[in-house]
Length: 612
Image (cartoon, rainbow, N blue to C red; front, side, top):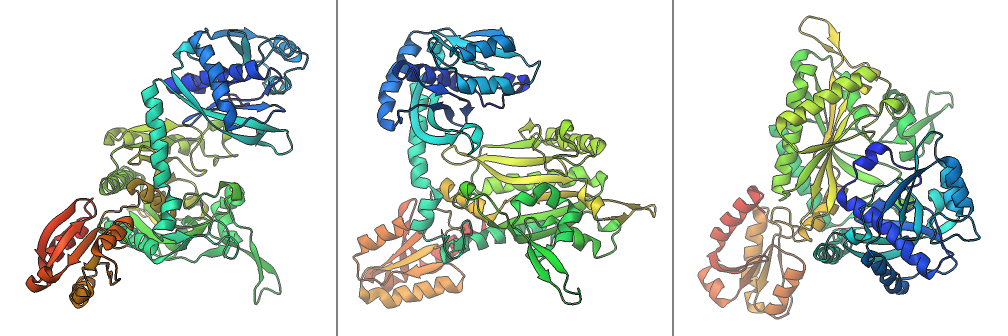
């Protein structure tokens, strides 16, 4: 079965891209190739995944990367034979009979039943169509679709092998998972592997250590809790400065809230029923005056309930709306240890959060203004490729995964859809991925090497303000509940910085660079002048350092380049005599001599404009 055992719906299968079909088909060719070498192999599921495909199998022989060449050789034979992918529909009894006889995911009938296929068939709901796909002598239980022939598969390569429990359940057998990737052409395949090599060089964990940006201490501090070194703290503060400036001009008001709250706050918000698995366990505290009664406190996993309390703290009128409350609040989420990944998945995060309380009439302008914020930030960071993922609800899961307000879901989803269409921003609609309280947008961006990343979110909340009893006085003298827009255009510092490290390969634009200028005296005789220039720059709040080491100037320049300093000022006798600085740019190399004042003016303009 070249799909996940949960099986896709017809709508999902119809939406499979050409590349996914190709990779889906390549999973069948992989299974065919393995069976030609090890006919006893038992196959489970083998879906296309991001950037490739895999197939899970049970086999006494432990497949290793040393086996890939001979497996690929068999796969190439199958591709060369240009076998047709033939689809057939069978009833449940036929499918079970074929699996019991060992004729599924096999090249010929064998003595052992196709045990994983038997289990998968038994899990298919009554009445659902059961389909098989055959290429050559290989027949597999599969929902499809595929390319027409194996010869259409193009270029492929096996990439890795890992262990995986059947259906992801550790109570089930542990299988071998063989990963591969496939593209239409050899050129595309080669470009993909070149990108992977470049990605290794840009890995934020590697560069974070080399550039002394952040560290982790799982043993004493705890896993997933980053510690920011001075260079990394510069990145945090510059992003926060950018957000504060932008939000000030957009009419936001800044607030601060505590890092924890009583259980009752999250019961009111509804987060505990929907989100408790992602929250740290509660602390039980016997409070004074509570007659020894233990009260549960939770570390906050989100800022919104606290902001709702701030809205409720003051009587509100329609004249106060839209009210935009912003905070760089630290939140804590108990991500599973196996999901932690550098800065991309952490348990402590500083979030560029804000909540906009508005009327329905104000919604379109406010929601669009948030999207415009995204576009501004994308331009600043040089992100040319982006897409909005508009996530909606599944009516079948109302009251389970989503709040049970069917009419409000329809209304707010149409409001968001209308804003996106009118704005002309490219978007795709994704069902069943909304927040529990309303539809949302995830801003997808692509880095300099083409890696996709969720940069920010923009969510509509029609439910929780009502739970908190939030009201504003209308023009007519009545009271209404505001809509709430949750937005985080810069996401969390952790994820955003992880992405930006990889996007810029650690070579940040000058405004963001931890060290903007390094002053390099050619010899000890010029140290006093170097200190004078360094002090002048630092008085203007330029992040400047001075290399007073006895190293030769070539070594000093190489070190500054390795440490990705934006500018180097080389100072010798000629520069000191004329009160000049010899400017060397990290990007452009030697730029000639300037007066210190002229260089400072140019540098300040570059930083103020946040030039790339």
